[in-house]
Image (cartoon, rainbow over all chains, first blue to last red; front, side, top):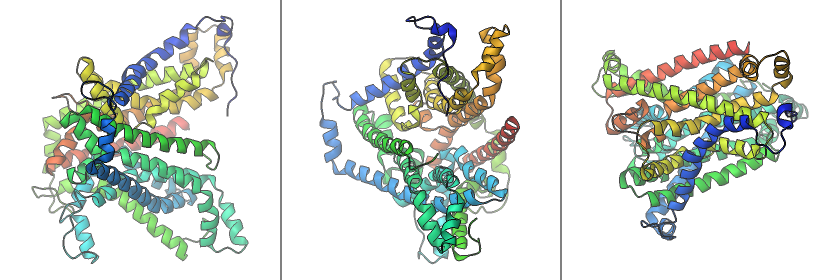
Length: 291
Length: 264
């Protein structure tokens, strides 16, 4: 925490005049943001309420919410987001907990290895999954070897395949947010619970997981909003047969050139992500999570 | 650890964590290992052992061009984000003006906004505006998603910076610009380098903006990989991706040692 520093003397004396230096320092970044960020975003919002001629209309939103194809797209996007988040919680919790609690010097190395996939382009990681998920691929062989399936399984171009790949792409983000939360919970609390007679499992559940609940929730919001808006993995692994909103937005923008309808879907996605981040911000500020 | 790792609880956590680790690393290992296979198609586990695909990838001029373009764009984006981000962060922390908080929120907002939404907005905007085409569009767009990383890393450091150091330099006769470079820059340099590195990696790996705003004949390496793996598993593409993973690993190790040295 820092306290507000006193203003430099040369600026304080000038009264109503706008100081030149900060304006010059801020101008390039502000200009860049206004011209290539704020204005295009506002234009996009407007596009969704316009027909091809530019007149105001709500038809496109009505079309999105009444056409069963697009509702299915929305549903698939939500399923993908929820399933991806659940897998990252299931695998992220034990990994983050052990990394946060381990006292060995290997823990740092393991943490670095966990974050390494974040540096590898999502395209490259999705490609790895394409090789693994293909019919007669490694995952299909593994499922047969485990006697879970009888014949080859095609996971490429399916929603489950997309979810498996996307959860791997986003798992490091969940691990990093949970790691920070577990580091902030002193292990003494578990010891105290155990010295009062709780078994390790109970202590872990009643003390640590309960305390980490806010962190798990905020990590989930983050992963969920990234999952529903990510493009490379659903496009490569899911393809047109497991289309979600992100891939539909790409097709509308680049192939069909129907920007108005692309704007509608992008706005729906944007509103969902903004709402989630609002809740996320509330959680961070309203206590419950120590960062 | 408050409980023994060999207890049932410890073991089950350990097994789940190991599974998570394998899950994280296998698809990346696949990309590196499968181009060693001798077959004309990509398979995992690979059959046979050959270096021909890796050799072909290194000798393929198209991928080299894409790589060099990505490298050049990422360098420009890192430079722009680091300089604009630092100037903005400096102005926000140093000068008390109304709206500073709002500006900070504006600068950080691309962190929340999905890149996909930005890509759609910019595609429509650029096409209708009649601005000249070129890779500068991509540079501008990627700079906007990279500036937040720089600001987020540099801002806390600037807030903690002891301003009396700078005042001391000024009172000893240094010009404001000299004191800025001699006093402030050395303090924030590690953060600035970290921010620039984040910007570089983000720009280099970024595929959504690069795909939407791509100019014919000027395709970045991730877009090249994206387009060709959609059509089929050409072993050369896999080798290019494998090389990219190895390069990322090397860069990470260098960054790690560099980070240790700047801190110590």
